[in-house]
Length: 458
Image (tube, rainbow, N blue to C red):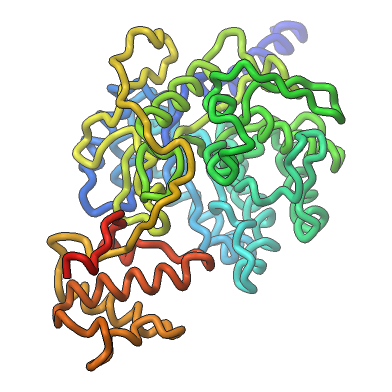
């Protein structure tokens, strides 16, 4: 073989490796499993294949799921749990063992293409959380070392971060990372991503900034269907949707630290199809509209990119495969799925981007696109376990601040003497007193919101 032939062969092999490591160009789906009523792993993989998902992102490295994905053309992202980060960061043997157990046991039959170290690590601001900050990049390095030792070059290593890593996001050209992480964490992270040609994985939800300010942010601008054009005064770039603004704020934040070419990957995005009474804009209509338009944008050929990165393909994962009934927090947390827990579609969507909008069936009208101005109460859900309800009642009443004072014997709300009534009063009282501090009307699925005053039926 001549020198030129050897050079051509090396170049060809390098391009094959790079191509194999790159995303498929198809939309991916996050497969979360925080539910007690979800279909089996086998049924879930079949659903992903039927939906023509190009990739799937797991929040662990579940052995059953990885075995079931073997032989499919679905590219897979697996995750190192947060609690394993410190051990892996401080011990190469632990990193090697993790790769052996969770990668080598399935690769290459299962197309593992990404290892994500932790999940939104920099959003944890407790003392223990901050310990993870300092170990995040070292853990990523050790995982990469383990892969290289096995001559595995088609798996990227990254970490998904939330938008709260940014101090400023608007206008996009002012994008800046938080000062508490900028030098200590972000610079080493960006150096690693740059040197390994990996992606900056970002969880980006236009729903949250829009729902926090629906008066001043146009809903159609958030749903990719506005004629509004916003010109960034700093960059002169023109924006036609909220997602591009959020993504480019990350681009400008990276550029501000001297990193101009690290590519973005959307680790999570989506829109809730339902929620609590006060969860503005959470509807099937808006969820279907956002995700359908997202698919159209992200699967466009040639790639559309963003105003700051025109023409670049951005891999994206929709959150999530299912509605997950054990996720805590406001009602929207349990309604991000493309599918109901029984496996049926919440709304029609074509993840390939080939289906015209006119080919979809009509969507139900939405009635909550403006903030709810009426009253609502938090009450015991119907048909719940009374023993569990008693436990939740005890918890609510133990939080102080006079939450259950009116339920003591002789007080005005003591009667009727029933667990359901007392729980409903306690839940509403607790929610009213602590809602501003982040409390939700959930109580492990034992509570629901209502717009009917429960005292009128007591």
